[in-house]
Length: 307
Length: 262
Image 1 (cartoon, each protein chain N blue to C red):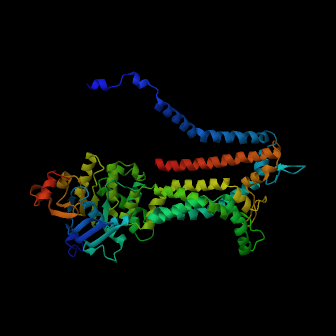
Image 2: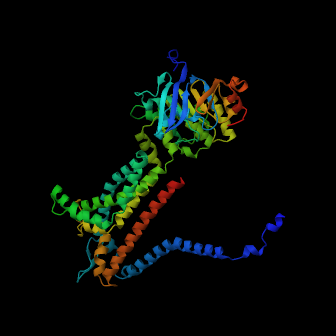
Image 3: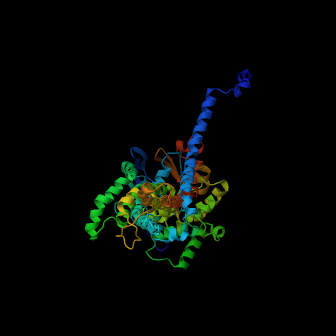
C-alpha cells in the first residue's frame, strides 16, 4: 500500500519553477556576497593604476616619506614629501583617541553594565544617532563653534588646529567605538560576573577585575577601529585643522591631514600629471594603512569570539 | 573557628516566614527552615519548586536580577542578612556559592584561588609566600593540588569540567566561609566527575555547613545527612536523609521520591 505513494523516480529530476527560483536566488545572493570583495579589489586596482605611474617615475622613497615639504605646484622644483601630512594625521588621530577612549569606554561600561531596560535602549539609539551625524556637520562645528572658543579660552591666534580637529574627531569616533566596546562587554558571559559577585566583589570590582580583562581584545579592536576612522576621516579634518602644512610642536599648531590634501587638491590637478599621481600614491598609502588597522581590529575582535 | 564554638548559634541558616517574588510571581511561600551547622543538607524537589531560589536568597545573589522582592528573615550564623545595615560583601565572604555550571574566571588557576582572598584582604600586596600557601592549601582541600600543581599559571578555563568545579569550590575556601551553597554542582559533570566532586563535598563536611540543591535523588540520599523536600515554593518535609527516604512522613514526599512526578 504505502509503496505506491512513493513518487516515481523521474519526479525527482523535474526542473520545476521552484527549482529555477531557488537557483536564481542562490546566484543573486552569491553575487551580493562577493560584491564587497569585487569592489575592494576594483578600488585597489584603480587607485594603484593612477598612483603607480608616480611611484615608478618621479618617486623617491626618502623624499616621499622623509621630507616635510609638500610643494607639488612649485614651478621650478616640485617636492612631494608627506612627512608633515603624516604628522598632521597622526597628531590629530592621537589626540582624538585621547578624547574618544575615555568617553567611549565610559559610555560602553555604563550601557553594558549599569543601564537597564528603557534607559539602555534609549542610550543605544542615541549613540547610533550620534554616529550618523555627517562629517561635514562636525567640520562645521569645528569651524564655527570650536574655533572662537579655542581662540578665547587659550588666547591663541588661530583656533583651527590639532586641538580643534582632535576633539572633533574624537567625538566623531566615540559612538562607533562605544558600540563595538559595548558588544565586547556584552559578550563576556554573565556567569563570570555572577561568580565574582557571589565571592563578594562589588560592582566596580566585577568590572575592573573580571569584565574588562575578559573583554580586552574586543576593547582593543574598538580602539583600533577608532584609529582607522581617524586616519580615514576627511571633511571634518579638512575644516578643523587649519589645513596648513606643518609638523606640529603643540596642540595649537595648525596641521594638514593626508586625506584633506587629496580632497582639496585633486580637483585642481591635471589628470596624469605627477601631482595627480602623487595624490593617488597618498591614496594607496592611506588605503594600506586603514586596511591593516581594520584587518587587525577585525582579527582581534574575532579572536575574542573564538576564545 | 574553634575559639568561640560555644557562642555560635545552633543553626547555620535559620529563616522565618521567608517570602519571595520575582516581579508578581511568588516563588517562595512562608519558608521556615533551620539548617544545622556543620552538616550537609540537601534540597530536593521538582523543577521550579523554589529550591534554587531559596539557595540564591541565602547569599542574596538573587538581587542581581533587580525585580526580586523579599519579606521575612534569613539568619545566617545568627545574623539577619536581609537587614538594612548588612554589608553584602561581608555576607558573601561568609557564604560561598558553587554554581550549576563550573564558572571559573578566565584567569589563571592561581589567580582564581586568590580572587576572593584578594577581594577581602586589606589593601596592599599579599606576600609571595603567603600566596603560595593559600593556593596550595585550598587546592589540597579540594583534592586538586596533585593534578594542577604544574598548571597553576594555565587559564582556569582549560581545565576539565570536573577540575573546574573543584577549583570553583577551592576558591571559596581561602576566605574561610562558614556556609557553602551548592546549586546542582554535579549536573554538568560526567558520572566519574560527579563521583569525585561528591566525594570532595563529603570530605568538606564538618568544616563547613553545606547546603546542596540537587535534582538527583540518589545523590541526595548518599551525600547528605539531612534532606529538605520542597514543592511549589513551600517546604513539605525536612528531616534526617535516611529516615526521609525510608519512611517519608508526607504523601507528596513519598510520591516524589518514588518518582511519580518531578
